[in-house]
Image (cartoon, rainbow, N blue to C red; front, side, top):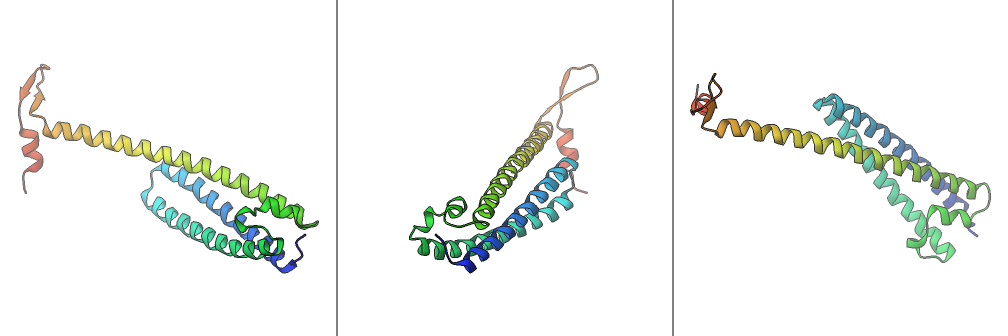
Length: 169
């Protein structure tokens, strides 16, 4: 049984902070989704900075948690790589065990929600990039083509379009 109350309290506090940061990250990803749909580049760049900040916060908190996990795993004589929040709940008494179970559930759900939204945003970005690439290909084909259509619908060789675009002012 885990008896290091300060370590358990510290871990619970850090897990609460992790949940807050993940909730903020999820909120920012939802905002990113809306921004992508509204096509606002300035807002997207600003939001991405905030997302990066949240990711850095998560990394810092995870580092702190892993240090506490190392101390706790030593006390429990378990390898730290085998210790999880859920396993930790088995080595603590109430109310701690219940708190660890709740943190595990909340974090698992948040991680799932974040991943789903991240994938949705990624698909939206890839589709947008594909649309842009196709548009560039179409425009490029117009620029590089020596064929133009005249009013009667027949093809006429011409390179006026290229000359018009590349002409220096």
